Image (cartoon, each protein chain N blue to C red):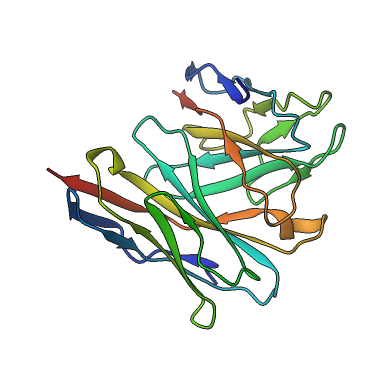
Length: 114
Length: 119
């Protein structure tokens, strides 16, 4: 079955540590995205990638980094520079970034930093 | 300025009744797409329905339909015959522009409406 996998579902880290969230898709989609969701809020875009070896900052990229070495994979690193890292993180992909293509989402990773 | 506005933070509906979730949007781009997503308590975002700005007819997908009023810039989601499993957060989203490049291809989300279906 095609889809997007994110692991782990729950992640706990100590303040000051970097942590990497994985995102894998087997939908053969070109575009991939990372979003952050805080309680009672909509989704905010962190980073996006249109093709392999290319990615762009979204609205809230500070304190985060990404890589896109393979079409299927788009890992997100939450660095110690991110001031409020505790949140729900969603990865998504779409065939392309054209307006009429919907994004498919993974199950999300809930990150708690103490 | 907010690009997507969902004015109903929470709504209740009786099982088997229809419900309308409101969404208004703001764009000067003539080409855009409007999307509705459902987010159950598990957290995953589930795509429900899409409406393109040039589509002549309102989109429908099973029990979901989109009441698209272009002049009013509204894209309300109508759920017919509500079921208990419809209880979830619902997000309206917009993507501007047909072409690649820049921030225009990004999906912009509203803050959501929490729908609760009563038995």
